[in-house]
Length: 552
Image 1 (cartoon, one colour):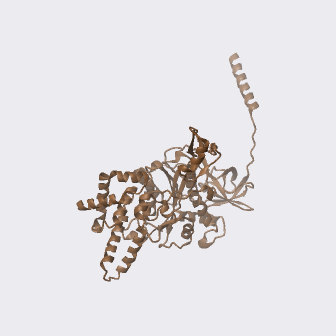
Image 2: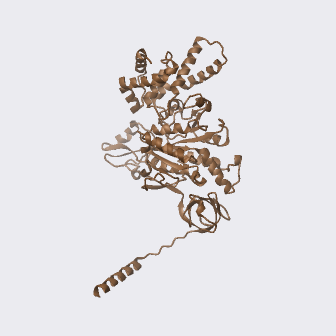
Image 3: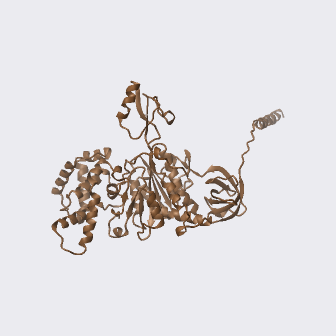
Protein backbone atom coordinates (compact mmCIF):
# COMPACT_ATOMS: atom_id res chain seq x y z
CA UNK A 1 0.00 0.00 0.00
CA UNK A 2 2.90 2.36 0.67
CA UNK A 3 3.89 2.68 -2.99
CA UNK A 4 0.27 3.46 -3.97
CA UNK A 5 0.04 6.17 -1.31
CA UNK A 6 3.32 7.59 -2.56
CA UNK A 7 1.99 7.72 -6.14
CA UNK A 8 -1.15 9.59 -5.02
CA UNK A 9 0.91 12.11 -3.07
CA UNK A 10 3.22 12.79 -6.03
CA UNK A 11 0.22 13.32 -8.29
CA UNK A 12 -1.35 15.69 -5.80
CA UNK A 13 1.92 17.56 -5.47
CA UNK A 14 2.15 17.89 -9.27
CA UNK A 15 -1.38 19.31 -9.42
CA UNK A 16 -0.57 21.81 -6.67
CA UNK A 17 2.51 23.02 -8.54
CA UNK A 18 0.48 23.48 -11.74
CA UNK A 19 -2.22 25.41 -9.85
CA UNK A 20 0.36 27.64 -8.19
CA UNK A 21 2.10 28.39 -11.48
CA UNK A 22 -1.16 28.95 -13.41
CA UNK A 23 -1.48 32.46 -14.81
CA UNK A 24 -4.93 33.56 -15.81
CA UNK A 25 -4.86 35.63 -18.99
CA UNK A 26 -7.98 37.35 -20.19
CA UNK A 27 -8.40 38.68 -23.70
CA UNK A 28 -11.23 40.85 -24.90
CA UNK A 29 -12.87 39.74 -28.12
CA UNK A 30 -15.85 41.28 -29.83
CA UNK A 31 -18.67 38.82 -30.43
CA UNK A 32 -21.47 39.13 -32.93
CA UNK A 33 -24.19 37.07 -34.55
CA UNK A 34 -24.98 36.35 -38.17
CA UNK A 35 -28.19 38.08 -39.29
CA UNK A 36 -28.06 37.00 -42.95
CA UNK A 37 -25.79 34.94 -45.21
CA UNK A 38 -25.64 34.12 -48.89
CA UNK A 39 -23.34 34.05 -51.94
CA UNK A 40 -20.20 34.28 -49.84
CA UNK A 41 -21.31 37.33 -47.86
CA UNK A 42 -22.49 37.39 -44.23
CA UNK A 43 -24.04 40.36 -42.44
CA UNK A 44 -23.11 40.34 -38.77
CA UNK A 45 -24.69 42.21 -35.84
CA UNK A 46 -22.26 43.28 -33.11
CA UNK A 47 -18.44 43.19 -33.51
CA UNK A 48 -18.21 46.73 -32.15
CA UNK A 49 -14.39 46.77 -32.07
CA UNK A 50 -13.73 45.06 -35.40
CA UNK A 51 -11.15 46.67 -37.70
CA UNK A 52 -11.23 47.06 -41.46
CA UNK A 53 -9.88 43.92 -43.19
CA UNK A 54 -9.70 42.07 -39.85
CA UNK A 55 -10.07 38.31 -39.86
CA UNK A 56 -13.16 37.06 -38.03
CA UNK A 57 -14.04 33.46 -37.16
CA UNK A 58 -17.47 31.88 -37.44
CA UNK A 59 -18.61 29.17 -35.03
CA UNK A 60 -18.23 26.62 -37.84
CA UNK A 61 -14.50 27.41 -38.00
CA UNK A 62 -14.68 29.25 -41.32
CA UNK A 63 -12.79 32.54 -41.53
CA UNK A 64 -13.99 35.79 -43.02
CA UNK A 65 -12.75 39.33 -43.66
CA UNK A 66 -14.61 42.36 -42.35
CA UNK A 67 -15.07 44.45 -45.48
CA UNK A 68 -18.05 46.73 -44.79
CA UNK A 69 -18.07 48.56 -41.46
CA UNK A 70 -21.54 50.07 -41.14
CA UNK A 71 -23.39 51.62 -38.23
CA UNK A 72 -25.86 48.77 -37.73
CA UNK A 73 -23.95 45.77 -39.09
CA UNK A 74 -20.64 44.50 -40.45
CA UNK A 75 -20.37 43.01 -43.95
CA UNK A 76 -18.07 39.98 -43.88
CA UNK A 77 -16.75 38.18 -46.96
CA UNK A 78 -16.53 34.46 -46.19
CA UNK A 79 -13.18 32.84 -47.07
CA UNK A 80 -14.48 29.32 -47.48
CA UNK A 81 -17.70 27.31 -47.64
CA UNK A 82 -20.44 29.75 -46.66
CA UNK A 83 -23.07 26.97 -46.67
CA UNK A 84 -21.80 25.87 -43.24
CA UNK A 85 -22.88 29.23 -41.77
CA UNK A 86 -26.41 29.77 -40.52
CA UNK A 87 -28.34 32.76 -39.23
CA UNK A 88 -27.73 33.13 -35.50
CA UNK A 89 -24.23 31.64 -35.58
CA UNK A 90 -21.66 33.31 -33.35
CA UNK A 91 -18.83 35.36 -34.88
CA UNK A 92 -15.65 36.37 -33.06
CA UNK A 93 -12.90 38.83 -33.92
CA UNK A 94 -9.36 37.45 -34.05
CA UNK A 95 -7.35 40.65 -33.70
CA UNK A 96 -5.41 39.74 -36.88
CA UNK A 97 -5.53 41.77 -40.09
CA UNK A 98 -6.05 39.54 -43.13
CA UNK A 99 -2.74 37.96 -44.08
CA UNK A 100 -1.20 34.96 -45.85
CA UNK A 101 1.75 32.68 -45.10
CA UNK A 102 4.97 33.21 -47.04
CA UNK A 103 8.37 31.61 -47.34
CA UNK A 104 10.64 29.34 -49.35
CA UNK A 105 8.32 26.41 -48.71
CA UNK A 106 5.76 27.86 -51.11
CA UNK A 107 8.10 27.60 -54.11
CA UNK A 108 7.06 24.77 -56.39
CA UNK A 109 3.64 24.47 -54.78
CA UNK A 110 0.03 25.12 -55.75
CA UNK A 111 -1.93 26.94 -53.04
CA UNK A 112 -5.27 28.69 -52.57
CA UNK A 113 -5.49 32.41 -51.70
CA UNK A 114 -5.27 31.54 -47.99
CA UNK A 115 -1.90 29.85 -48.54
CA UNK A 116 -3.31 26.35 -48.00
CA UNK A 117 -1.78 23.66 -50.28
CA UNK A 118 -4.13 22.13 -52.84
CA UNK A 119 -1.60 19.99 -54.73
CA UNK A 120 -1.67 17.01 -52.37
CA UNK A 121 2.01 17.32 -51.44
CA UNK A 122 1.52 17.85 -47.72
CA UNK A 123 1.83 20.86 -45.41
CA UNK A 124 3.99 23.90 -46.16
CA UNK A 125 6.64 25.29 -43.82
CA UNK A 126 5.77 28.91 -43.05
CA UNK A 127 8.54 31.48 -42.50
CA UNK A 128 6.46 34.63 -42.20
CA UNK A 129 2.93 35.99 -42.24
CA UNK A 130 2.46 38.81 -44.75
CA UNK A 131 -0.48 41.25 -44.76
CA UNK A 132 -2.49 41.07 -47.97
CA UNK A 133 -2.87 44.85 -48.02
CA UNK A 134 0.27 46.97 -47.72
CA UNK A 135 0.99 50.58 -48.60
CA UNK A 136 3.14 50.78 -51.72
CA UNK A 137 6.72 52.06 -51.27
CA UNK A 138 7.12 55.82 -51.69
CA UNK A 139 9.14 57.63 -54.34
CA UNK A 140 12.24 57.92 -52.13
CA UNK A 141 12.37 54.14 -51.64
CA UNK A 142 12.17 53.42 -55.36
CA UNK A 143 14.88 53.09 -57.94
CA UNK A 144 14.63 53.70 -61.68
CA UNK A 145 13.76 50.67 -63.80
CA UNK A 146 16.88 49.78 -65.80
CA UNK A 147 17.27 45.99 -65.65
CA UNK A 148 15.31 43.83 -68.10
CA UNK A 149 13.05 40.89 -67.45
CA UNK A 150 14.07 38.76 -70.43
CA UNK A 151 10.87 37.17 -71.75
CA UNK A 152 12.62 35.24 -74.51
CA UNK A 153 9.99 36.58 -76.94
CA UNK A 154 11.62 38.63 -79.69
CA UNK A 155 8.59 40.86 -80.30
CA UNK A 156 8.52 41.89 -76.63
CA UNK A 157 12.21 42.15 -75.72
CA UNK A 158 12.91 44.20 -78.86
CA UNK A 159 9.75 46.35 -79.14
CA UNK A 160 8.11 46.63 -75.70
CA UNK A 161 10.78 45.61 -73.18
CA UNK A 162 9.76 44.81 -69.62
CA UNK A 163 11.96 46.03 -66.77
CA UNK A 164 12.27 44.65 -63.26
CA UNK A 165 9.83 46.61 -61.12
CA UNK A 166 7.60 47.53 -64.05
CA UNK A 167 3.84 46.96 -64.49
CA UNK A 168 3.23 45.85 -68.08
CA UNK A 169 -0.36 45.07 -69.07
CA UNK A 170 -1.09 42.12 -71.37
CA UNK A 171 -4.39 42.88 -73.07
CA UNK A 172 -6.45 41.32 -75.83
CA UNK A 173 -9.53 39.32 -76.73
CA UNK A 174 -10.24 35.82 -75.48
CA UNK A 175 -8.02 33.07 -76.93
CA UNK A 176 -5.35 35.34 -78.43
CA UNK A 177 -2.37 34.02 -76.45
CA UNK A 178 -2.24 36.30 -73.38
CA UNK A 179 -1.55 33.47 -70.92
CA UNK A 180 0.89 31.88 -73.36
CA UNK A 181 3.08 35.02 -73.36
CA UNK A 182 3.20 35.05 -69.56
CA UNK A 183 3.99 31.33 -69.36
CA UNK A 184 6.83 31.77 -71.86
CA UNK A 185 8.18 34.56 -69.67
CA UNK A 186 8.05 32.30 -66.59
CA UNK A 187 9.72 29.44 -68.47
CA UNK A 188 12.52 31.80 -69.55
CA UNK A 189 13.34 32.49 -65.87
CA UNK A 190 13.90 28.83 -64.98
CA UNK A 191 17.70 29.10 -64.88
CA UNK A 192 17.76 32.61 -63.41
CA UNK A 193 17.39 34.23 -60.02
CA UNK A 194 13.79 35.43 -60.37
CA UNK A 195 10.91 33.98 -58.30
CA UNK A 196 7.71 33.68 -60.36
CA UNK A 197 4.14 33.70 -59.02
CA UNK A 198 1.23 32.79 -61.29
CA UNK A 199 -2.14 33.89 -59.89
CA UNK A 200 -5.13 32.19 -61.57
CA UNK A 201 -8.38 34.12 -61.00
CA UNK A 202 -11.66 32.62 -62.17
CA UNK A 203 -9.98 30.07 -64.46
CA UNK A 204 -11.27 26.55 -64.99
CA UNK A 205 -9.55 24.07 -62.68
CA UNK A 206 -8.59 21.96 -65.70
CA UNK A 207 -6.94 24.95 -67.35
CA UNK A 208 -4.89 25.66 -64.22
CA UNK A 209 -3.86 22.00 -64.07
CA UNK A 210 -2.65 22.31 -67.66
CA UNK A 211 -0.60 25.40 -66.72
CA UNK A 212 0.97 23.48 -63.84
CA UNK A 213 1.77 20.52 -66.09
CA UNK A 214 3.37 22.81 -68.69
CA UNK A 215 5.58 24.60 -66.14
CA UNK A 216 6.51 21.25 -64.63
CA UNK A 217 7.41 19.82 -68.05
CA UNK A 218 9.73 22.72 -68.88
CA UNK A 219 11.37 22.77 -65.44
CA UNK A 220 9.93 26.13 -64.40
CA UNK A 221 8.09 24.99 -61.25
CA UNK A 222 11.39 24.92 -59.33
CA UNK A 223 11.13 28.72 -58.89
CA UNK A 224 7.36 29.23 -59.31
CA UNK A 225 4.35 29.48 -56.99
CA UNK A 226 0.81 29.01 -58.33
CA UNK A 227 -2.05 30.69 -56.46
CA UNK A 228 -5.47 29.42 -57.54
CA UNK A 229 -8.95 30.84 -57.06
CA UNK A 230 -10.77 28.84 -59.75
CA UNK A 231 -14.12 29.58 -61.37
CA UNK A 232 -15.79 27.33 -58.81
CA UNK A 233 -14.29 29.28 -55.88
CA UNK A 234 -16.53 31.83 -54.14
CA UNK A 235 -16.16 35.48 -55.17
CA UNK A 236 -14.33 36.46 -51.93
CA UNK A 237 -11.49 34.03 -52.70
CA UNK A 238 -11.23 35.37 -56.25
CA UNK A 239 -11.10 38.88 -54.80
CA UNK A 240 -8.33 37.89 -52.36
CA UNK A 241 -6.16 35.92 -54.82
CA UNK A 242 -4.08 38.71 -56.47
CA UNK A 243 -3.42 40.43 -53.14
CA UNK A 244 -2.30 37.10 -51.68
CA UNK A 245 0.07 36.49 -54.60
CA UNK A 246 1.48 40.00 -54.28
CA UNK A 247 2.02 39.56 -50.52
CA UNK A 248 3.86 36.27 -51.09
CA UNK A 249 6.09 38.04 -53.61
CA UNK A 250 6.81 40.92 -51.25
CA UNK A 251 8.35 38.46 -48.80
CA UNK A 252 11.08 37.66 -51.32
CA UNK A 253 11.39 41.28 -52.48
CA UNK A 254 12.10 42.34 -48.88
CA UNK A 255 15.06 39.96 -48.96
CA UNK A 256 16.55 41.81 -51.94
CA UNK A 257 15.38 39.26 -54.53
CA UNK A 258 13.55 39.75 -57.83
CA UNK A 259 9.95 38.58 -58.23
CA UNK A 260 7.59 38.32 -61.22
CA UNK A 261 3.83 38.13 -60.56
CA UNK A 262 1.27 37.27 -63.27
CA UNK A 263 -2.36 38.19 -62.54
CA UNK A 264 -4.52 36.05 -64.84
CA UNK A 265 -6.79 37.87 -65.12
CA UNK A 266 -7.93 41.14 -63.53
CA UNK A 267 -11.14 41.27 -65.58
CA UNK A 268 -12.50 38.33 -63.61
CA UNK A 269 -11.12 39.90 -60.45
CA UNK A 270 -13.22 43.00 -61.13
CA UNK A 271 -16.29 40.80 -61.78
CA UNK A 272 -15.82 39.06 -58.42
CA UNK A 273 -15.48 42.40 -56.62
CA UNK A 274 -18.60 43.73 -58.35
CA UNK A 275 -20.54 40.64 -57.25
CA UNK A 276 -19.42 41.09 -53.65
CA UNK A 277 -20.18 44.81 -53.69
CA UNK A 278 -23.67 44.39 -55.07
CA UNK A 279 -24.51 41.79 -52.42
CA UNK A 280 -23.14 44.18 -49.80
CA UNK A 281 -25.53 46.79 -51.25
CA UNK A 282 -22.80 49.23 -52.18
CA UNK A 283 -24.01 51.90 -54.63
CA UNK A 284 -23.38 50.70 -58.21
CA UNK A 285 -21.72 53.02 -60.71
CA UNK A 286 -20.72 52.63 -64.34
CA UNK A 287 -21.47 49.10 -65.64
CA UNK A 288 -22.67 48.32 -62.07
CA UNK A 289 -19.09 48.41 -60.75
CA UNK A 290 -18.65 50.09 -57.35
CA UNK A 291 -17.06 53.52 -57.14
CA UNK A 292 -13.76 52.19 -55.75
CA UNK A 293 -13.09 49.79 -58.64
CA UNK A 294 -10.12 51.94 -59.74
CA UNK A 295 -8.66 51.79 -56.24
CA UNK A 296 -9.09 48.00 -56.29
CA UNK A 297 -6.44 47.60 -58.97
CA UNK A 298 -4.31 50.68 -58.33
CA UNK A 299 -3.48 49.74 -54.75
CA UNK A 300 -2.49 46.28 -56.05
CA UNK A 301 -0.35 47.31 -59.02
CA UNK A 302 1.32 50.26 -57.25
CA UNK A 303 3.05 47.69 -55.06
CA UNK A 304 5.16 46.70 -58.07
CA UNK A 305 8.48 48.42 -57.54
CA UNK A 306 12.22 48.20 -57.81
CA UNK A 307 13.66 49.13 -54.43
CA UNK A 308 16.81 51.22 -54.18
CA UNK A 309 20.16 49.65 -53.42
CA UNK A 310 21.84 50.72 -50.19
CA UNK A 311 25.59 50.65 -49.51
CA UNK A 312 27.67 51.32 -46.42
CA UNK A 313 31.35 51.59 -45.57
CA UNK A 314 32.39 49.20 -42.80
CA UNK A 315 35.55 47.71 -41.38
CA UNK A 316 36.89 44.86 -43.49
CA UNK A 317 35.34 41.53 -42.57
CA UNK A 318 32.31 43.10 -40.88
CA UNK A 319 29.02 41.32 -41.52
CA UNK A 320 26.49 43.90 -42.65
CA UNK A 321 22.84 43.67 -41.58
CA UNK A 322 19.95 46.12 -41.71
CA UNK A 323 20.66 46.95 -38.07
CA UNK A 324 24.20 48.12 -38.94
CA UNK A 325 23.25 49.92 -42.13
CA UNK A 326 24.67 53.32 -41.08
CA UNK A 327 28.24 51.99 -41.24
CA UNK A 328 31.30 53.48 -39.56
CA UNK A 329 30.97 56.90 -41.20
CA UNK A 330 27.29 57.26 -40.42
CA UNK A 331 26.33 57.39 -44.08
CA UNK A 332 24.09 55.27 -46.31
CA UNK A 333 24.58 55.48 -50.08
CA UNK A 334 21.58 54.94 -52.35
CA UNK A 335 21.25 53.83 -55.93
CA UNK A 336 23.44 51.97 -58.38
CA UNK A 337 26.67 53.76 -57.55
CA UNK A 338 30.09 53.33 -59.10
CA UNK A 339 33.18 52.67 -57.03
CA UNK A 340 34.46 56.27 -57.31
CA UNK A 341 31.51 57.46 -55.20
CA UNK A 342 33.24 55.91 -52.19
CA UNK A 343 36.84 56.94 -52.87
CA UNK A 344 36.79 60.15 -50.81
CA UNK A 345 35.25 58.51 -47.74
CA UNK A 346 37.54 55.48 -47.95
CA UNK A 347 40.58 57.75 -48.25
CA UNK A 348 39.46 59.77 -45.24
CA UNK A 349 38.96 56.66 -43.10
CA UNK A 350 42.25 55.07 -44.13
CA UNK A 351 43.08 51.41 -44.62
CA UNK A 352 40.98 48.56 -43.28
CA UNK A 353 37.57 49.63 -44.62
CA UNK A 354 35.42 48.40 -47.49
CA UNK A 355 32.09 49.08 -49.26
CA UNK A 356 29.30 46.57 -48.80
CA UNK A 357 25.71 46.39 -49.98
CA UNK A 358 23.06 46.29 -47.26
CA UNK A 359 21.27 42.92 -47.48
CA UNK A 360 17.56 43.01 -48.22
CA UNK A 361 17.83 46.09 -50.44
CA UNK A 362 17.51 46.36 -54.19
CA UNK A 363 14.73 43.78 -54.59
CA UNK A 364 11.98 44.15 -57.16
CA UNK A 365 8.44 43.03 -57.86
CA UNK A 366 7.35 43.04 -61.51
CA UNK A 367 3.66 42.70 -62.42
CA UNK A 368 2.14 41.30 -65.60
CA UNK A 369 -1.61 41.91 -65.21
CA UNK A 370 -3.86 40.39 -67.88
CA UNK A 371 -7.07 42.04 -69.08
CA UNK A 372 -9.56 40.44 -71.45
CA UNK A 373 -11.24 42.73 -73.98
CA UNK A 374 -14.41 42.27 -76.02
CA UNK A 375 -13.93 42.63 -79.78
CA UNK A 376 -10.68 44.52 -79.22
CA UNK A 377 -12.33 47.37 -77.32
CA UNK A 378 -9.48 48.80 -75.25
CA UNK A 379 -11.61 51.86 -74.40
CA UNK A 380 -14.00 49.90 -72.15
CA UNK A 381 -14.23 50.76 -68.44
CA UNK A 382 -11.92 48.18 -66.82
CA UNK A 383 -9.29 48.15 -69.65
CA UNK A 384 -8.89 51.94 -69.56
CA UNK A 385 -8.63 51.86 -65.77
CA UNK A 386 -5.78 49.34 -65.81
CA UNK A 387 -4.06 50.97 -68.81
CA UNK A 388 -3.88 54.22 -66.83
CA UNK A 389 -2.32 52.42 -63.85
CA UNK A 390 0.33 50.40 -65.70
CA UNK A 391 3.60 51.40 -67.41
CA UNK A 392 2.59 50.18 -70.84
CA UNK A 393 0.64 47.45 -72.57
CA UNK A 394 1.20 44.52 -74.90
CA UNK A 395 -1.85 44.39 -77.17
CA UNK A 396 -2.72 41.07 -78.81
CA UNK A 397 -4.87 41.40 -81.93
CA UNK A 398 -7.37 38.76 -83.03
CA UNK A 399 -6.85 39.41 -86.75
CA UNK A 400 -3.11 38.89 -86.44
CA UNK A 401 -3.69 35.71 -84.45
CA UNK A 402 -6.07 34.31 -87.07
CA UNK A 403 -3.61 35.25 -89.81
CA UNK A 404 -0.97 33.04 -88.19
CA UNK A 405 1.16 35.81 -86.68
CA UNK A 406 1.89 34.37 -83.24
CA UNK A 407 2.49 35.90 -80.80
CA UNK A 408 -0.16 38.21 -82.24
CA UNK A 409 1.37 41.43 -80.89
CA UNK A 410 0.24 44.66 -82.51
CA UNK A 411 3.44 46.71 -82.48
CA UNK A 412 1.57 49.95 -83.17
CA UNK A 413 -0.75 49.82 -80.16
CA UNK A 414 1.71 48.11 -77.80
CA UNK A 415 4.02 50.38 -75.83
CA UNK A 416 6.45 50.32 -72.92
CA UNK A 417 6.81 53.59 -71.05
CA UNK A 418 10.18 52.44 -69.72
CA UNK A 419 11.42 51.79 -73.27
CA UNK A 420 15.05 51.08 -74.06
CA UNK A 421 16.04 51.80 -70.45
CA UNK A 422 14.94 48.22 -69.76
CA UNK A 423 17.09 46.74 -72.55
CA UNK A 424 20.62 45.41 -72.49
CA UNK A 425 23.24 47.20 -74.58
CA UNK A 426 23.28 44.24 -76.95
CA UNK A 427 19.55 44.57 -77.64
CA UNK A 428 19.72 48.37 -77.94
CA UNK A 429 22.42 48.01 -80.60
CA UNK A 430 20.17 46.07 -82.98
CA UNK A 431 16.55 46.94 -82.07
CA UNK A 432 16.65 50.73 -82.28
CA UNK A 433 14.86 51.15 -85.62
CA UNK A 434 12.75 48.01 -85.48
CA UNK A 435 9.49 49.69 -84.48
CA UNK A 436 9.71 52.34 -87.21
CA UNK A 437 10.51 49.64 -89.78
CA UNK A 438 7.39 47.74 -88.78
CA UNK A 439 5.27 50.91 -88.90
CA UNK A 440 6.50 51.71 -92.42
CA UNK A 441 5.85 48.15 -93.53
CA UNK A 442 2.27 48.28 -92.17
CA UNK A 443 1.59 51.49 -94.13
CA UNK A 444 3.08 50.12 -97.35
CA UNK A 445 1.22 46.81 -96.97
CA UNK A 446 -2.07 48.69 -96.61
CA UNK A 447 -1.27 50.77 -99.71
CA UNK A 448 -0.21 47.70 -101.72
CA UNK A 449 -3.63 46.13 -101.19
CA UNK A 450 -5.03 48.53 -103.81
CA UNK A 451 -3.04 46.64 -106.44
CA UNK A 452 -1.12 49.62 -107.78
CA UNK A 453 2.19 49.17 -109.56
CA UNK A 454 5.00 49.56 -107.05
CA UNK A 455 8.51 50.76 -107.73
CA UNK A 456 11.50 48.56 -107.00
CA UNK A 457 12.45 50.33 -103.76
CA UNK A 458 8.95 49.89 -102.33
CA UNK A 459 8.91 46.24 -103.35
CA UNK A 460 12.24 45.69 -101.57
CA UNK A 461 10.92 47.36 -98.42
CA UNK A 462 7.77 45.24 -98.51
CA UNK A 463 9.83 42.09 -98.98
CA UNK A 464 12.07 42.99 -96.03
CA UNK A 465 9.02 43.73 -93.86
CA UNK A 466 7.50 40.35 -94.70
CA UNK A 467 10.68 38.59 -93.62
CA UNK A 468 10.83 40.66 -90.47
CA UNK A 469 7.29 39.57 -89.58
CA UNK A 470 8.35 35.95 -90.14
CA UNK A 471 11.27 36.41 -87.72
CA UNK A 472 8.83 37.73 -85.08
CA UNK A 473 6.80 34.52 -85.29
CA UNK A 474 7.76 32.21 -82.46
CA UNK A 475 6.51 28.80 -81.30
CA UNK A 476 4.86 28.59 -77.90
CA UNK A 477 7.02 27.50 -74.94
CA UNK A 478 10.20 28.22 -76.94
CA UNK A 479 11.73 31.41 -75.53
CA UNK A 480 15.00 32.52 -77.10
CA UNK A 481 18.13 33.40 -75.12
CA UNK A 482 19.36 36.97 -75.54
CA UNK A 483 22.08 36.17 -78.10
CA UNK A 484 19.65 34.34 -80.39
CA UNK A 485 17.28 37.32 -80.31
CA UNK A 486 20.11 39.69 -81.24
CA UNK A 487 21.26 37.47 -84.11
CA UNK A 488 17.77 37.21 -85.64
CA UNK A 489 16.94 40.92 -85.33
CA UNK A 490 20.28 41.96 -86.80
CA UNK A 491 19.91 39.59 -89.74
CA UNK A 492 16.37 40.70 -90.56
CA UNK A 493 16.85 44.48 -90.20
CA UNK A 494 20.20 44.67 -92.04
CA UNK A 495 19.00 42.97 -95.23
CA UNK A 496 20.71 39.60 -94.81
CA UNK A 497 17.40 37.78 -95.36
CA UNK A 498 16.30 39.69 -98.46
CA UNK A 499 17.27 36.84 -100.78
CA UNK A 500 15.89 34.06 -98.54
CA UNK A 501 12.47 32.70 -99.48
CA UNK A 502 10.04 34.03 -96.86
CA UNK A 503 8.41 30.61 -96.55
CA UNK A 504 11.76 29.15 -95.50
CA UNK A 505 12.69 31.76 -92.87
CA UNK A 506 11.86 29.36 -90.03
CA UNK A 507 14.18 26.68 -91.43
CA UNK A 508 16.89 29.28 -92.00
CA UNK A 509 16.57 30.59 -88.42
CA UNK A 510 16.98 27.17 -86.81
CA UNK A 511 19.98 26.28 -88.96
CA UNK A 512 21.65 29.68 -88.48
CA UNK A 513 21.26 29.65 -84.68
CA UNK A 514 22.82 26.16 -84.57
CA UNK A 515 25.68 27.48 -86.70
CA UNK A 516 26.33 30.45 -84.38
CA UNK A 517 26.21 28.26 -81.26
CA UNK A 518 28.73 25.88 -82.82
CA UNK A 519 31.07 28.18 -84.74
CA UNK A 520 31.02 31.31 -82.51
CA UNK A 521 29.95 30.23 -79.00
CA UNK A 522 32.06 32.95 -77.35
CA UNK A 523 29.96 35.76 -78.88
CA UNK A 524 26.74 34.38 -77.46
CA UNK A 525 28.29 33.52 -74.11
CA UNK A 526 29.53 37.07 -73.56
CA UNK A 527 26.13 38.56 -74.48
CA UNK A 528 24.26 36.28 -72.09
CA UNK A 529 26.67 36.93 -69.23
CA UNK A 530 27.27 40.68 -69.60
CA UNK A 531 24.61 42.00 -72.02
CA UNK A 532 27.31 44.12 -73.69
CA UNK A 533 27.13 45.23 -77.29
CA UNK A 534 28.70 42.53 -79.50
CA UNK A 535 30.93 43.00 -82.52
CA UNK A 536 28.19 43.54 -85.11
CA UNK A 537 30.64 43.36 -88.01
CA UNK A 538 31.70 39.89 -86.87
CA UNK A 539 28.05 38.81 -86.70
CA UNK A 540 27.46 40.23 -90.19
CA UNK A 541 30.43 38.29 -91.58
CA UNK A 542 29.15 35.12 -89.91
CA UNK A 543 25.72 35.59 -91.51
CA UNK A 544 27.30 36.17 -94.94
CA UNK A 545 29.42 33.03 -94.60
CA UNK A 546 26.40 31.00 -93.49
CA UNK A 547 24.21 32.26 -96.36
CA UNK A 548 26.91 31.33 -98.85
CA UNK A 549 26.71 27.67 -97.80
CA UNK A 550 23.08 27.36 -96.67
CA UNK A 551 20.55 25.49 -98.74
CA UNK A 552 17.13 24.24 -97.73
